[in-house]
Image 1: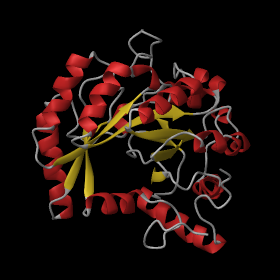
Image 2: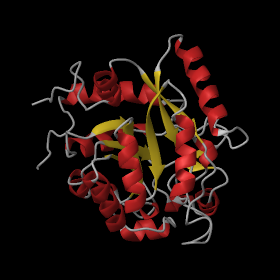
Image 3: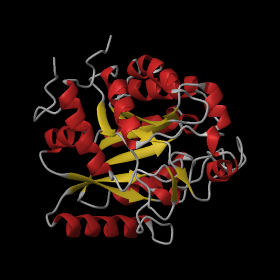
Image 4: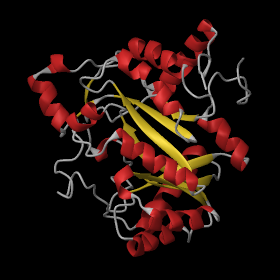
Length: 314
């Protein structure tokens, strides 16, 4: 059975989900609100996650040199020029951990986005150790007026892997934060990185059941990329054999196997990541961009006559 996700697609697609929810195109406006992370500032650790360089995924307008209002305005103008038609927008607080400040400061930060009539909602990227009941009560109130989802970086279900990448939290902490957020009636999202050093592909497939049991609305996947100015970039230069990076064809095969086991209710936002060529060291996918990858993926799923959740066991 292929679930009725719309337009006969073989997975629960983000674009279809939002067309149904909003009745029109929806775009994210990325915002850098000047946060940091507890594994950067010494609260838990220093140096941050070994793979992380925030410049690899931020648009040029998302910089603390611009105020939040300026970033939103520039982002709206960018997308309207690109698509030649007005869209609704989600304020995407993306860089670093966007709940890692006292509540009174968070209220000021998020209130800036509410001044734009074009903003229909919020996507808040954070860590599981940067949330508490006080903040969740505030986000619950905000979610009653706007679409709102809190997106947690899980990255791996394996605690030894999380320790190795200097993540600074456990899978159990991530699970607890997601469950508590859902109990407040707030939408939840998760981010996972495929191919971290020491984590085999079989182990990743065995972990799908853990992910599928979480009360998630949305999920993002990202193949490991080696990005300049990161600890992994230095490690890769010294010992490249320690990294088992996916080729594009390997990743197509793997991610199809993965989502066959995945809860079909989860909306898949992204299958793969794309970083600026000037920042990416490896792997080399011969110019295959995210939209190309998605087209290849869907053709292969059709060829195999498979779909998200085909082998899912509740």
